[in-house]
Image (cartoon, rainbow over all chains, first blue to last red; front, side):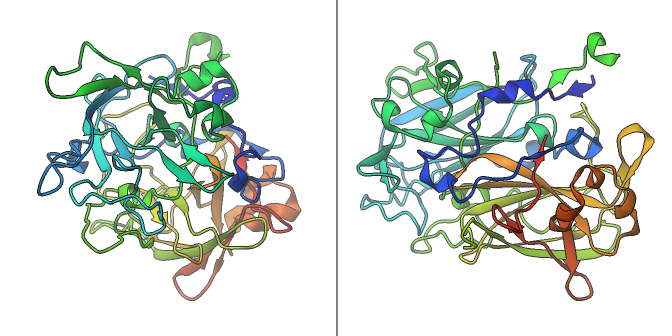
Length: 233
Length: 201
């Protein structure tokens, strides 16, 4: 299998400069990016396999002395490339606020309680089908300083690798039907509604466990396509 | 129509999950702990090559440090080999992975301990000068930016096929400066007169 990394799919990504998200204004490149061919350096990438994780790393309800507070949920899905082939045996990292909308971070000054039984961090490795699964707590919404009365929709941060350093992706998973969507400049930095839809998990009744936890499905598609014969000449 | 999952910012609070043992101070009262999977020290017992330290700072359009940026690097080993090959997920790795991740501290400072990479193949039978691919994430960055780190005093820089694409008066932003015996300094400016060259990949 020989992979290529077309640039056209990147139309779904936000622009570096998105002024409604104010922190982009002083941090986005201002000079044109230099177009360059993909070399061996870009088309290779790190591999973190099953030795990178330990038992319960993917269960955020089992990292403390007791159970964390909040709504227990299952988040699962597949990491896929642009041909919808699985990205197998690949590290998936996750971090999030607790049920009250508070992160374990000194910089987070939101006056909501920390939960001594909830760290908000997890990691796992996909199986041969690209499948991953986490058990966690539904994160709360929280305020931030971007503009007056700014609140982030509930979200979980994801970090995935893919087949090469070009397919490296950090994104956020949202929950269906969030009433904060219209007001969030980070969510809306993705300007096409169809593209935004791929950041929203779907409620998964079939995999919801009766009397225990709701389930949400979130598939993650990263860069990379098979090099077809048409591309070879 | 794209099928990619869009990128979103890493945000200001990634440290707990992504760089728990790194430079960023995040633990409010010392009660939390979390293991590290990807860190800023790439050195392994079996590593071959010249050990180096890379230090630098990252700065915004006002020249202020960016304390909540996160850098990842990807590089060949001292002999110019990457720890995997394109399209393969099944090769056994040498202990040296060639991948590192550094948080920034309050002064926007990051660092990596690694080895100087060897030369690797470039397009059309060329050879690339020793370099490291650098990927930058941060609050205020909705998608990562890619740049490259080359080494001061490296003769091969003159014939590097990627450096050749960069206007001559901006190439210097990609060259890490020797700062002592085994240390290189590499500052990143997101904007301004000294704006670092970023690549469209």
